[in-house]
Length: 256
Image 1: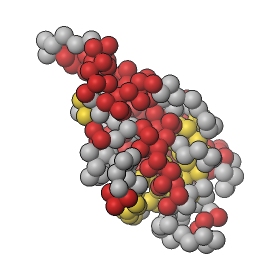
Image 2: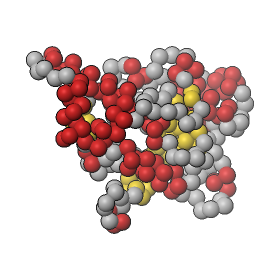
Image 3: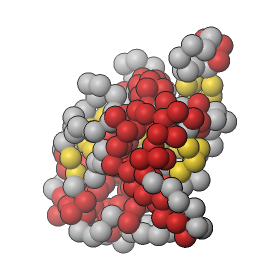
Image 4: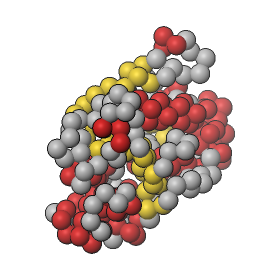
């Protein structure tokens, strides 16, 4: 496991010099060098390498350990992976309120190109960010509009407990005009508008949560992990890539 950086393109309307350097967490396949950006035609380019696009907003925090654990399992099965910070997220120095789905999609394409990935794994609402034409999987995809409704509902309930009357439609109108803080994340008006309009359509094969044999970790109140779920997800991906033995054997091999 290594921490590395990658060049993220500037936001629309910004000069090329506004390109930012974002962090990424990378796992090499067992016995292979760390997944930096390989030269065209190098052996690393022909090996499986996943771009992992994490869950968004509050779910990113709840699924962070699960995501990293899955990447570690994939590495043990011979599959490299890289998890880039999206602008405004995790260790990024870019302000979150300045981001929108269009920029995140451009960032995902840039990261896929820089790290020369062969496949993409999206988690939950990040399904809408998958680079076009890149094969891979959507894990438990969620429509961004659905996640926005959940965030608005949580804000409404918190306001009610504090004696403040706020309705979902009222908050949505305010957010589309001026931006809004939801679950501790300050989202700009462009992000709110795009989330609201994004119904989400699966463009890649879906790995449903029930294939992992337990409820999704995003349902927990606090961040958590489940080694068996991470092992199952990694095994399903490895089987799909035909990298090694069938799922049943993989689950036995990587069981905690």
